[in-house]
Amino acid sequence: MPSIKPTDLLINPDGSIYHLNLKPEQLADSVIVVGDPGRVSEISLFFDSIECKVQNREFVTHTGIYKGKRISALSTGIGTDNIDIVMNELDALVNVDLTTREIKKEHKTLTIVRLGTSGAIQEDIPVDSFALSLYGLGFDNLVHFYEADKAGLDKAMSDAFMKHTNWNPDLSTPYFVKGSEKLINLFKAEMVTGITATATGFYGPQGRVLRLGLHDPDLNNKIQSFRYNGERIINFEMETSALYSLGAMLGHDMATVCLLIANRATLDYSTDHKPHIRRLVELVLEKMSGL
Image 1 (tube, rainbow, N blue to C red):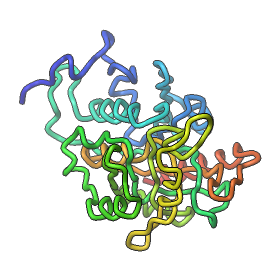
Image 2 (cartoon, rainbow, N blue to C red):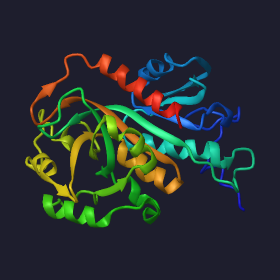
Image 3 (cartoon, rainbow, N blue to C red):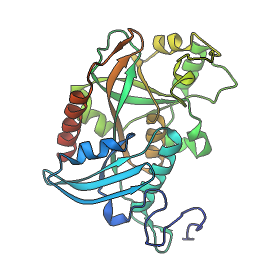
């Protein structure tokens, strides 16, 4: 098997992978990813012991033990472009020999759960609820740079969504990809479930108006009213579609769980979301420790 080009897989002089600055032995098979680097320590605070702490740019990793389970907490920063870096490098850490740059014969599956904050878009969902993403709806175009047929994209759902919203052809083609059935079953009893829309930005792409107007001021209402096989879009955030699509293509189990700190439909906002984040961290750690 030919080795991966050195300009395609960048390795640091100490043998760690380029952006994450991690060596294979520093990564657990179960990973919690968060956007905020500061949230990594909020997770590792619950660890019984910490093996290592690594930081490079916005990528912070703490690996340790929680109730006998080895877990890594890792910050990705914001956006699907960062997820492209994180997912490819996490996969390379376990499925590529970093010395020879050859793909390993035996594939290893990582369990990766995104733990984040998000905004609900349906009026009946209370602020401070926990949301589980059954599907990621991607507005980001990332998946289209890869062999997207391997991601299990639901083209019929995408076609229905574009028809419902009268989708602007100048925008990238939206795509739908499902999370891991195993992880969905693990979390769904405690959470609101539905489709998560992954936006390419925080302001205009999520319908916010400051000084710039929107191409389609009614787009959020169209997104809110979309229904497909009994499912609806419940929240906006900025990472899930890339996690789910790259995870599917690379053969990893993925799920996103979010604390809903605002409701865009009712204009409600959490007065203090920190205790609820702690509850979500404990819930995720408990669930993952049993895997």
